[in-house]
Each structure stands twice: as C-alpha cells, then as structure tokens.
Length: 250
View 1 (cartoon, rainbow, N blue to C red):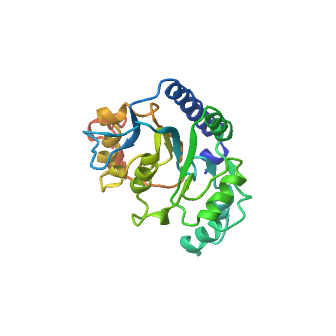
View 2: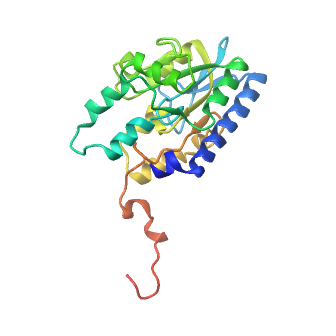
C-alpha cells in the first residue's frame, strides 16, 4: 500500500504506462490495424490469433480497480479497520458507496480524455458486480461517462465469474480493440487464469508472441497490493541455480 498509494515511483510508473498507451493508440488510429488485441476464442499463448478489426471503430478496454482508479477509501479501511470483518460484506458496501473516496490512477484522466479526443471509444470491463456503483466510482474519478452494456461491463453480465473473455469477445464484435490495460494478467486473457505454479505463470508472460504485446497493445499497471501475482515461497521465486550466500554461510 505504501508503494502503490503513496510512492512517487508508483505515480511515475502509472504515468509512464498511460503515456505509452496514448502514443501507441495514436499510431493505430493513424494506421488502422487488421486485427485487434483481443484473442479469438480457442486461441492459445503459443498460437495467439486475434479478433478481426474489419469494419469496426477503434476502442480501448480497461479494467477499473487499480487500473483506471485507486480504491483509496476501501484500502485505508482495510488497513486501519477492524480485522475481524469479512471481505465480501465490506467490498459489497464499497461498491454501493457514493464513490467519493477514489482517485484516478496517475495519468489516467488525461490519457482517457486524449483517447476520446482522437475518436477511440473507452470501455470499462470490471469484475465489480454493481454496475451503478461502478459507474459512480468511474464518474467520481473524473473518467466517465460509463454506460452499462455499452461502455461498461461488469462480472454479472456473463456467467463466467471473474473470467473476462466472454465480455471481451462481446466488445470485440462491435469494436476494433487497439489497446487494453489492466493490473492483472486476466485483464488481457483468461488463459492466464489457468492454474499454474509461480514459475509457470511467469513463463506464460514470456511466451515469445505474448512478450511482444507488452507495451504494444497490452499495458500493465502496477498493483503490489492484491491479486494473483502475490504468490510464492522463496524457493518458488528464486531459481535453484541463482541462489547465493557469503562463503561459509548457509
């Protein structure tokens, strides 16, 4: 939390990502691509086929929480409130709140405004359940409008739970998705959500044809606070042939 919500370094990384995204999107608006950056149904990381852009207007698709806005109120309460409270009830109350205790991620407001100015439709794809609450939070962060079923999609729009591909495919039927942004790899494809060890999951992000997408259509925002990234023992994280101690120490 100190890093994401308080540090200048996290601010800089966020702005860096947004600046790169806008530059990339501007190029794609000038030179429309043949394919979007949404994987087709049945595509794999080794064979990443993409949905066609033929006859479609450009759009950019973003996760919401810790991608376009920071949940400062919820996380402050999580850090300082009573420890015996269950997460689901607190999160549900947060979703239904007035949204005043959020801020846009650094650089998000200007970048989203730039995208809209250049004719790119901005679409939010979130795993929140409450569409009205999500729209309030997005508006409170100065990033709206977000219209449910048009430029806002929530978890309850499909029966696939936290997996977002079904929503992405629905969006890609109407739009040429030229860029996507998120703080979890599942914000880009459900193939990243399949069970895997820490090393296997990291290797998926390094698959050659996938590695080429980071910063070139897929843009990751920092989130060391929660999510699937926060896993692994020291043995999982550090390769056996890359460990070290001073001579004589174990």
